[in-house]
Image (cartoon, rainbow, N blue to C red; front, side):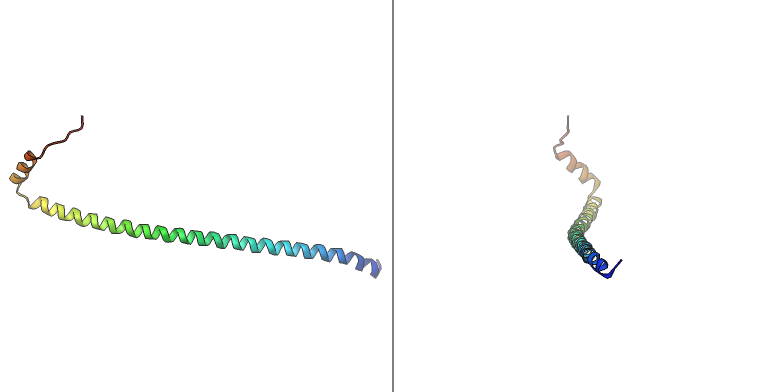
Length: 95
């Protein structure tokens, strides 16, 4: 092979190599962008779930406090008064 033949083949070969490098770089850039967007979406979802979980925990704490208070009230009522109260209340039964 002569130098002129080597130079004649090297031009198109360099173009093909450059095109492959550009395509790979674009693929990596797009892939990184997609993963970044997905990570941001997952972070936002995790933040929403964390907020919801805190709200649920606060509600549960309030319900537990209310239940403790109701238990205190029920245990402090005289059984005779409780029976009388039950007799005065209309009963609703599902048929």
